[in-house]
Amino acid sequence: MFEMSNVGRFFGEVQTELKRVEWPKWNEFVGATVVVLFLIVFFAALLWVVDQGITIGIKYIFRLFFPGF
Image 1 (cartoon, one colour):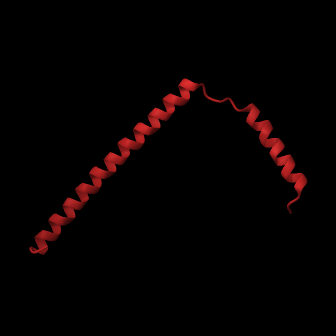
Image 2 (cartoon, rainbow, N blue to C red; image 1 turned 90 degrees about the horizontal axis):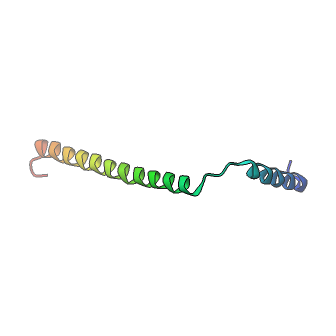
Image 3 (cartoon, rainbow, N blue to C red; image 1 turned 90 degrees about the vertical axis):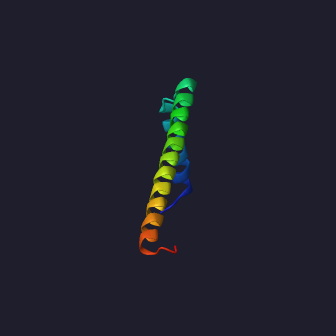
């Protein structure tokens, strides 16, 4: 089931694997972060535009069928 010796071995293996990882250089890290932030802003704006378009379309359809709406 779950033993303390297994927990210790697990963290030892985690430490070994973390030493094998090839971490990105600082400029690669910053570049990737900038790209991710740009894409987040871009897709948020895109979704906002699509949402506004759908909202306007639905309001238009409702006004056709329910003039007082």
